[in-house]
Length: 164
Image (cartoon, rainbow, N blue to C red; front, side):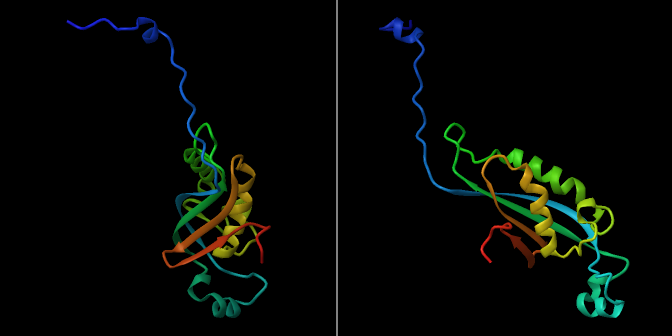
């Protein structure tokens, strides 16, 4: 037979929870997303011979494609209530709306409005992606946009205020 509680008042009273310790420090968090796109490296102000010399097979008028990997890094202080800089699920939703939904299985030269008139090199893409993503970041600060065109070829952009 169970024993009755020694102090029944204590067991019915709500106990005030102790606040978690708050740790301070700048943290960098990264979310990775994937998309597949076609593009052509081509400068319309130059001759086909110039484009072929400069870009080789990447200027093929019938396009070529990549399985891109986009990594976006935010920096900030963890929120004392959540421990997060930002909920990574929310960051994923931002990246999908700003970049993936617009670029996945699309021709970057012709089908993506924010890339019209831009040579879609990896270097130009990271700058354009920063411009699309940054206005949606409400927690932390956008630190880096990194785009892998292949496992060995990638570009990183640290924003317009980065030291040159």
